[in-house]
Image (cartoon, rainbow, N blue to C red; front, side, top):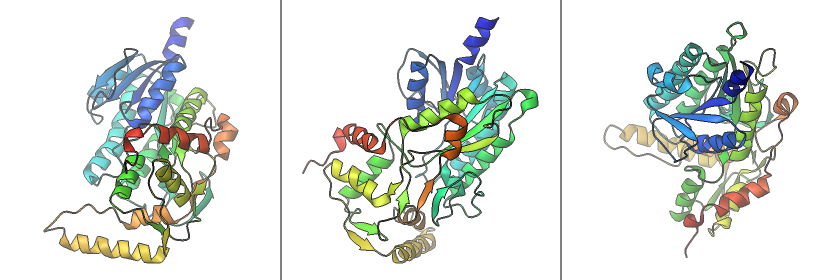
Length: 345
């Protein structure tokens, strides 16, 4: 009996395991001796040590086979934040998460670890060393974040010690690293099209960027310490590299590392914001006639021109969290992993 319990405790399911964070999480779990199931809409990689289950996140019947005999579930499935599909955000982040919770409880899962976002408390104004007791944003910066707030509330309120069901939310910020399909490719594309010449504001605003291996480390620490009477139960925790850096310095490091010019001209923050706001109004008026997906938006201006970095003190105190990879090493590893995106001129 004891052997079966130990085996079950080392069997887990990663929902969204074919994604960027999910793949890294699966690899580290395997290294730590876990048996891993992956549930996703697609099979994103090949690994004969992993059992894949494909299906619709919002369908409990699709989810249940992947949860049989599993004590621990990581939920890191989410549409790309850069998408503008509001229906998809609501469906996956909110309705899908409700289905995950129901399926976990029905299957007898004991632990659910959610990948949330530090942006659930961000309203486009400065946050310096923000703590987890900041209130949820009343005016979230975009609809993606609005649905992440709904998602986190749902997961944390599902924590139920009486039913032996424990939940925790991990809030990373600015995840980056090898195989990231978002940050670096989008940055390079912007540089190639001449859109990375300007620094918004004075360039001094500090921001958290978090290496994917550190995010994974935070998830696994949380999972292994989530149990009866744990201070983690029903709570959210920031996980970052704990090395806030000026936003434009980080962007410049990535760009110059790949052979592109760093931005050098300054534009006042207020001017950039109102230009972006004006553009969004014009596009809204034109939306019945043409559809344009702008890259210059008030939300992106806020992300690039304000302070937003967060304290990891609670994760250090209650999980023993400490970043495994420094920011300097993380940037070097990331640049090295994108030889195909290097400037060829």
